[in-house]
Length: 610
Image (cartoon, rainbow, N blue to C red; front, side, top):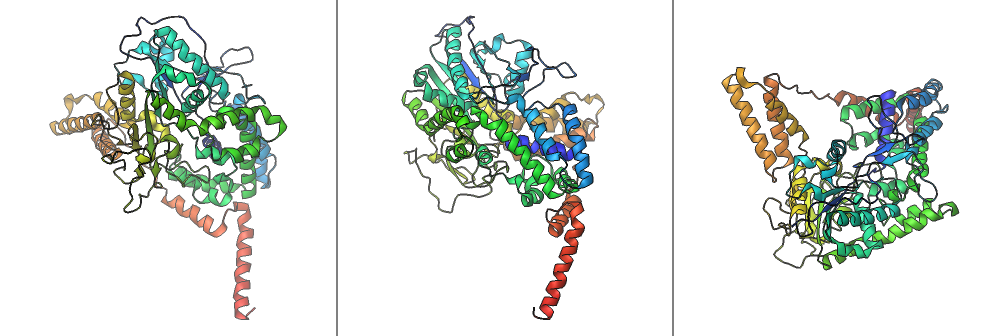
């Protein structure tokens, strides 16, 4: 039950796309450079949980965990002891009675208590006890604790750049904040950076939700366009995510019992199949009506008591979904002030691409990084209708590129649309014939990564190397400039290979047999070569990881974890669904009896022609 409960909570967390970051002020310390140093100060506007938003008590003191670390408020303040105390009695009683004896109410209370730390009032101002840790100076002036926070989210230190560290700034914000306030804070932050460095222009690198702040700033403060040298969007949510569109319009998959018990957990790709199948089987200890009532009430409280009062959350609602979602949640008189703000962003969202074009027309260098061939997480009904990167749809991140759905290819004989490319020599069709980049707003300045998961972007070394080069100098002019960075590249996650190489470095090879030593060296050399080659794919990484892992395991330096076989649990889960649908175990005898009676009636009806 405990494992099932944790998983249900994680599903609700995933139903929200919780992206990150907060506030601002002025500092007067100037860097030692002059405005003609040859570099431009660069401001990172991060996304998806990439800010430190922490819990404080009523006196403003930091709340610390048992290890003395500050407690994160993102995406929720999970007090395990309090959750267990609230849920255990109604869960036990509901199990015993096989009906909802306060379980749905208890779960709703847990949702309110946990996410309530990020709640807002009817003016979209945060009311929870949270503080965003802000960096009002360059990365060079950050202390070790602050640098650790930044590198946890974006590992700067792993990818050297020629850009001086006193020219790198990290704008942090609260994802549940007031979007208009965040726009003003970013605008003022730019002025602060210009004052500190003596430069008249800056670079911006907005990631994911961070792009919604930048997009709104271009709309509300168009004068800022003259203060920008380069903008590099990284998987930007410029037209939101269909996940939020679905959630705000009530199109939620796991609130349908048939889907919850028949594929949701496997397709969600946040759990291995063994765990997913186990949860499907264990969840039946509750009648399906009780489980669904609990989930429905939890989602209702999450959306209505936290999400819809955050105007930053509304910036993630796609423009096509906003009118119906606003009618659903913002039409009452009490929501008038929130709707004024969300309507304002809706207009900015509709103008997002034209505002980017204005940047280009003014001579600002604009680049984009998009990811594709990873279906959006199946929280909502739209998950498999468009290509995406697990969190955001490709149309949003690429500013309009056309693509086949994940697992499919463009039709035979397809010709690129050339919506935004007039050069007949340019081929903007991806190697696997999935994406037509010519339909995107910036066909010559958008880089695409095949099979890259949005939430793992920071672990793609090629994306980070590309970003470091782009912010350091103007050597890369477009997708044709460097053979190291062609328009279409592969998704990859370097963490495991780095972990294996670190273990290999710690091996004392003195007593190894020559053959073992040679094989280990060869595997290490191959791994390093793959890491150094931007054109290597995720398949190349998997092959190197397997080889190096086996080498290390053969000398006792690494243990290969054996994957649990889900086939037996899958057979049980499928049998239960095929024979009993979504019924809980207590309902199965009655369902079986009814099924038997139906068969008898059908038999005799056929026998006597009834």
